[in-house]
Amino acid sequence: YTLEAVVDAIYAQLPEQASVLVGWSLGGNLALRLAEKYPERIRSLVLVASNPHFIKTESWPGMHPQVLQVFTDNLQRNCSQTLLRFMSLQVQGKADAKSSLRQIKRAMCECVTPNIEALMSGLDILKSTDQREILRVLKIPLLMIFAEQDTLVPAAVAEQCRLLSKQIDLKIIPGAGHIPFITHRQQMLSLMQDFIARKDD
Image 1: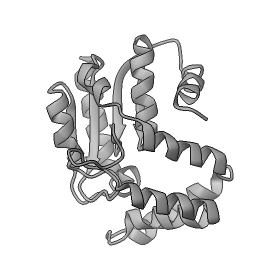
Image 2: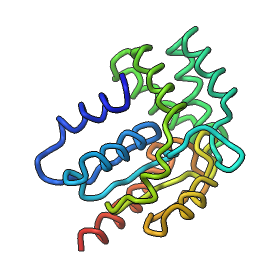
Image 3: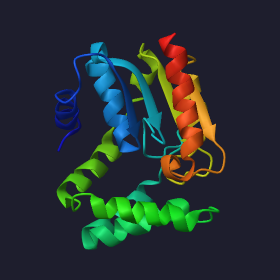
């Protein structure tokens, strides 16, 4: 499970006609690489709660390496419990936390049992990937949606991305955490629909 292998597998599933590609979190990194590698197949790109450089540095907001290591260790010890705890933290303190958590649990039950090898590979991709240069030169229309209360991908990443390219359409959803498509579904849909409509005009 390498970044390139997953990107090529997604590419093989894309329709012939250029698509609007949406990627969440690590999926945003995959989508961004796919758009760089196969630009003719991507009409526009939407990245949700995604960081082109996931690891925090002195000059870039992100997740502290030690926090990511603790998560990695917990994942190896108890995969399902760690994933559920991780998702629960994303809705903590929200007015509709209980209903959002029910949606998450239902979705997790409907999914295939997580593949620990794939999850660990995903974390390795997050640790090692730096896509800031892609953002700087990308010509494809791009919307990046951030969440004000995201503890994994800080909303401060938006301003850093603005410095990389003035062409990026940047939005921050107030009050949202890392899973805005569950907690702030309508706002996210509206942002995406407006972006796609404008770019298709």
